[in-house]
Amino acid sequence: MEYQLITVAREWIGTPRHDGQAVRQVGCDCVGFLIGVAKEINYLPSDTVIPNYSQVARGNSLLDYLDKYLDRDLNGLIVALKYNNLITHVGIIDDNKLIHCH
Image (cartoon, rainbow, N blue to C red; front, side, top):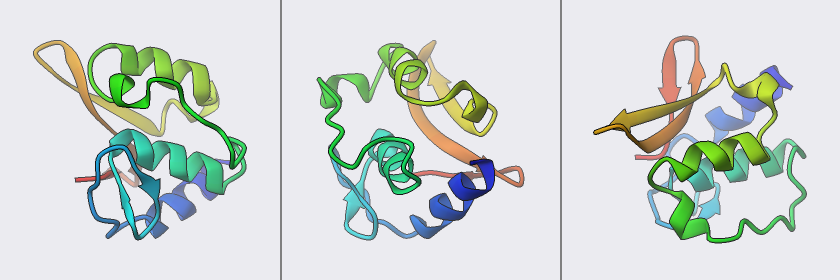
């Protein structure tokens, strides 16, 4: 699954930033990027709806979100960035580079 995650994540490079979205080459935010990649590799069903999506995108609740929806085997590939002790951004590590929405 690790190889598939990285391969699909690379395909998202260049997707424009758009809050609350998770559609490759159309728009996404950082959480949407993770959701979209997870759906493409069939880790999450395509009809998955994340409750309170806009509220989990910032703050420490994002850690709870990631733990609930993403496999712990992928945790080494998923990076959460903190500012003032709050999670503010997430992405996927590929060969010491960060793939993310910006």
